[in-house]
Length: 191
Image (tube, rainbow, N blue to C red):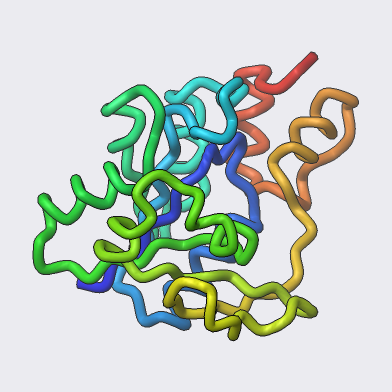
């Protein structure tokens, strides 16, 4: 099995996340892409705004009907700071015959040497790096080995969505309708 792993806060999940997962699945011929929401990201010590339960529920709503996209609660169930190397080791132990790919942005690839256990990460999984239109090719020999994924330009961020919600602006074009309804129902991200 060729398995793509997509970690992040997903606070909230949006169309950019979904497009990235689908582009990676198609271009890298992945059998599945797993969204793995972090319990706590090492570089975001203040944590996500929405609870783990809400973030998992929004992800499940966003991917409903796509048999190639899954949600894994592995990092949330483990708790504490979510380190990629720990997650990859756990998935390798559960699926020893799977070939693992780790989805990331070009900025994250440049920063990978500063992550916890970068050599172990590269031993366990191949980075699938998103190169957005207009960005230069990732052909620097100093960069870790990786595969590039092309995706359409989408100017969407979870922080902008939270800002819009706090100021009463629409987010309908940025987030799946089911997720918008869920956010409204649970009054998430209000001031």
